[in-house]
Image 1 (cartoon, rainbow, N blue to C red):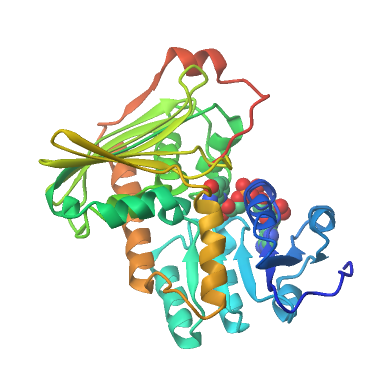
Image 2: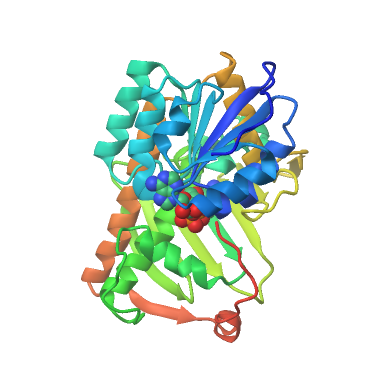
Amino acid sequence: MSSQAQASPALLGVGILGAGPVTQAIHLPSLARLGNILEVRHIMDVDPAVAASVAGRVGARFSTSMEELLADTAVDIVAICSPHQFHAAQVIAACRAGKKAVLCEKPFAMNGEEAAAISAVSAETGVPIIVGAMHTFDPGWLAAEGAWGDLPEQVHTVRSSIVLPPNPRFEDFATEIVGRVSLPSSDPTDPEVIKAMLTGGVMGLAIHDLPLVRRFTPDFADVEVLHAEIVRPFGYVISLRAGNVTIELRAAMNATWEPAWEFEAIGDDAALKIDFTPSYVQAGSATARIRTAGRTTVLGPFGHNGYEGEWRKLAELAGGTGQPPSAETLIHDLEFALAIAEAAAGQVDTGRVDTGRVDAGSAASGTTEDQEVNA
Ligand SMILES: NC(=O)c1ccc[n+]([C@@H]2O[C@H](COP(=O)([O-])OP(=O)(O)OC[C@H]3O[C@@H](n4cnc5c(N)ncnc54)[C@H](O)[C@@H]3O)[C@@H](O)[C@H]2O)c1
């Protein structure tokens, strides 16, 4: 473990569990812009070389043990950026260690039982938890939420549409996320592979926007997937209904389309459209447009994105101000995602899922190795 310069008492100390791409490319750049309130003091990774090198970049101490990081009294806020299967146990341990606030990368649990256990520990210890659903902290989204009036009551259609550059790693990530570490084959016509791709797409990518979708479909007990399809090399098209709302979720890794991350909620008299920056991009906030008959209100772009918004919120919570999201909201967001993932995969057993379309752009570029974008 390396030593660190004297911690400033005026700053809140940050400790990070897991120092992979998300820590390196997302959180450390965000934290670097917030050096007036937050200081990275401890980096933990099970790989000692990763822990040492990432900690060295920010002048933090490092370790390979979660217990060591949680026992570090210089750490006020813990961020959990390890692979998803460790999230629930690490969130619970961070709460029990009496930290001031916890950020857990998505998905914060892999089933409803884990989510309920987290919420019980958070309630018992009083430690606020936020989940890294960055769009919910994006100032463009927050401004829209403050301005949309009665839009949620009249919305009949919601769309989340994501186009990112192709990334072979992404497909691995998507299949890994459902715990299928070794798939029986990578044959994209194999029903088990298709199920894993659909589930992985929902839990790994669509999950960023599902808390936003749920603002327009608070009662999701009756989620019905109407159509599910994979898009090669990685992507999905899923249509569903929740209550009276039709939801369309689309994603494609594609080199010929311009990267875009759009969210729309459409009602009879008003509609919202938000353009988010692609994941990993640190270029200011989303821009929201609220359209009513003959009038469009444009909100944003603002100076920071949702990743930085997460850290600003954590600093508030650790300082004893601000309201954390309710545990009920976090559990329902997760249950909503799990219900969609399960129902989409269930379509495969009915024989109603296409083996996936290969669009010209992705087919031409699917093996490109020089672009590395994750979400
Ligand atoms: N918010 C976003 O935009 C976004 C984007 C991509 C991924 N994610 C999420 O962020 C998390 C991390 O993603 P990543 O791509 O960096 O993952 P990764 O698997 O590439 O890296 C995670 C790191 O954690 C380390 N690790 C493994 N087991 C550990 C343990 N038990 N405790 C601590 N560290 C451990 C690994 O050595 C690795 O360095 C995942 O949960 C993922 O779902 C979020």
